[in-house]
Image (tube, rainbow, N blue to C red; front, top):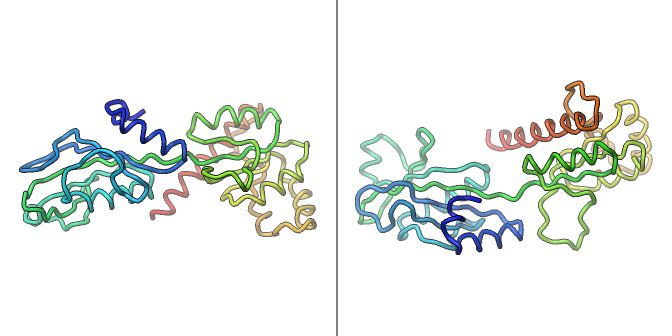
Length: 262
């Protein structure tokens, strides 16, 4: 729970409602002011996915545009933002252009007559990505137990088409280990996920691949299945194999974030 939720029951209730619907949102906190400003340090607000203020207060309209842009950026990048809304003449003195980021702070122009400076910290709250684990093997059980500790929402069956407000399925791991491998792989390939892995040897997956393609599965999609699943760490036990898979999931997740913002 964040400090904003602890200090304000109104913010906490609104945040919990958004979490229940798996909607992204953000907290904004004024951390510093200089000169004449309406809001003071400690003022907080809850912002929706479109950057609008849902609860709380951050002062007048002088900060609204900058806060909205910072919120959208924070939710897109999945990392906090620090924005300083500063009078234009002060920006010129510092040699900083509006929109420029310097030492982790992005500067925005304050065009209000008050001519104060407001520094605002934006903290994004993004629904956890969903990991679909197919199978009831010891590896599947170990992975289902371990993944939530690393901010994954775990499901053991594909969501029904009628189920709304579901986190997007980012990764699918087929850990059937001989119990319905082909059907599970077909189900995995039907999901709009960016990563599918199969717990089993590369030789076994070659045989299954031929059957999948013969059954009408897209050959390119089948070729993208990672087999065997996980990083090569010399894993032997189900728990170690689950750890190697989770390490690869983290690597895949973080690499995607970096690639999106290069």
